[in-house]
Image 1 (cartoon, rainbow, N blue to C red):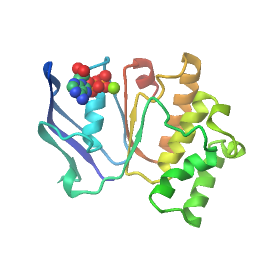
Image 2 (image 1 turned 30 degrees about the vertical axis):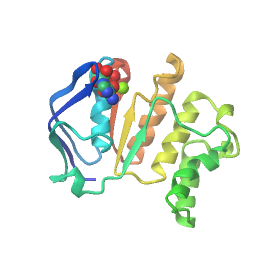
Image 3 (image 1 turned 45 degrees about the horizontal axis):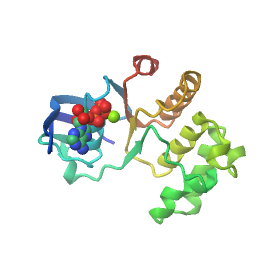
Length: 201
Ligand code: ADP
Ligand code: MG
C-alpha cells in the first residue's frame, strides 16, 4: 500500500425483521504505514466497515478507494484477524503459520526463511513444534499474526483481536502485537470497543 480512502460509505442490512442502518456517511483515510484504531460500542458497525474494506460486503452507497482507484480495480491483499485466532488445533505452530502459503501454493525457500525470521524475532521459534493448546492466548494471537504476515498483506484488519483474552493477557498481547505491526511497517486498522486498548496504540 498505498493509501486507503473510505468515502461517504453507507450500509443497510435488509432482513425479515426490517432494515438496519449499520453505517451512515462514513469517511476516513489511512495512509501507507499508518496504524489507526476505530473505537465504538458493540453494534455500531465496526465489523461492517472492515468487511467492506475486505470486499466481503459491498456498501449500499459510497466507495472505498485505494490510491484513488476503486477497490474493484485494485488487488489489495488483505490480512484479517479476528477475536478468535482461527488456529487449527491439530496442526503445530509451524504447520499453522505455513498453511496460508500452502493454500496459495507459495511455499518456497524464500517464504520459509521469512517465516523462520518472524518466528525467531517474535519469540516463537522454540515453540514451532508445539500445538496451539500448549500456548498462552497471547502467543496464539502472535502465531495467528505471523501466519497472516507470511502472506505479505498490503493492509491488516484487526477485529477486536484481544477481547477473548483476560485483562492481564490482553495488555501483554496487545503490546506485543502492536510492536510487531509497527516493526513490520504494516498499514493497519484495528477496531475495538475497548478505549484503553485503542489508547495504548
Ligand atoms: P460491531 O462490529 O460494531 O459490533 P456490526 O458491524 O457487527 O457492529 O453490526 C452493526 C449493526 O448491523 C448491528 O445493529 C448489527 O445487528 C447489524 N448487522 C450486522 N451484520 C448483519 C447482517 N448480516 N444482517 C443484518 N444485520 C446485521
Ligand atoms: Mg464486531
